[in-house]
Amino acid sequence: MHISDKLADASNGGKPTFSFEFFPAKTAQGIQNLYDRMDRMHGFGPSYIDITWGAGGRSAHLTCEMVHTAQTALGLETCMHLTCTDMPKSKIDDALKEAYNSGCTNILALRGDPPREKEQWEATSGGFRYAKDLVTYIRDAYGDHFDIGVAGYSERCEDNEDVDELVDHLKEKVDAGATFVVTQMFYDADIFLDWVRKCRAKGITVPIIPGIMPISTYAAFIRRANGPMRCKIPDSWMAALEPVKNNDVEVREIGKNLVVELCRKLLDSGLIHHLHFYTMNLAQATRMVLQDLGLLPDIEAPLEKPLPWRQSLGLR
Ligand code: FAD
Image (cartoon, rainbow, N blue to C red; front, side):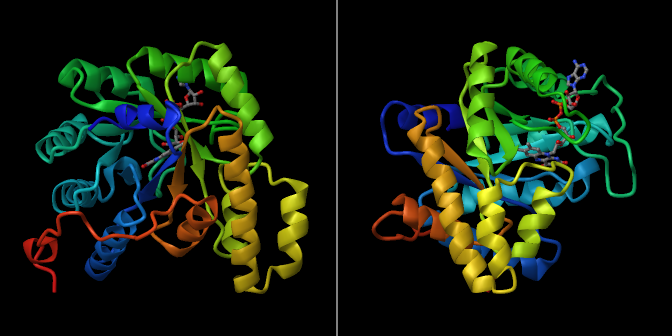
């Protein structure tokens, strides 16, 4: 099912909904553990999940394999991330074909970061320079089969600090056929909500989904906020977290309260009806936030129809 159709229920006065992002683990054991966690987190009731794409097509086969498993064996509505720079066009074609064959109907179309060994990204032969080129390509090749999401930036993108220009380029991606927007992480609700209003004023009418990063340790919180995105940390957050930075339990509890407050502010604004969690492949911090928001089901039921997915994957 298309993500934008799923989102319509929440925006029509229904209960807020949420989704989870995962990235391919590096080892066979890591992947097995991740499938177990995804299976458990299915019980939290996400509308859908995302699987990221390694820059330059690194670990492309793992992304495709995880999309297939999540969609077919775990029964999770899945969105595959796909980038369009620093790799041959054939990899884009192969990934789209595999997603199609797996029954996946949602793609997050991205330009991509430079691969680890490079400083700059490079255009791909076939005319892929920006994410909008990939959106156009997927629409031309697959019509309406895929719902296509694109990335949004409320504060800055790696190579662009001009928020107005970024909004103009976001509008171009939507005009090319994107049907929803997922944003980069952020901690300041006011900056984010002003940006959403700016997008709406520019004529971007598709659903905008905020990317929420739960807090598990102080070091990771600071590293991510000061990373390539350099998002603003409200003074009140630093004042609350800095004094307990060496106590992981307190950081998790206070961090949870701050993220819950952020989510409440977004939902109370009436502009946001769905929350997308960057799980970092971990369950606990996201679960704590959902619980406080009252969004967890009363019983975290296993899959409605238990599937013999472990055997089908050759797992113990
Ligand atoms: P674009 O929308 O193409 O924008 C890139 C830059 O080009 C911006 O500065 C923009 O302003 C500029 N630009 C766009 N159009 C034009 C134009 N017509 N003329 C001039 N300039 C233009 N990366 C991965 O490698 N794998 C992932 O799985 C992944 N998942 C992500 C998920 C989310 C929700 C987000 C927010 C980002 C993700 N990224 C991922 C990172 C993303 O690839 C980088 O942020 C990348 O640098 C930009 O990608 P984009 O799709 O936003 O590019």
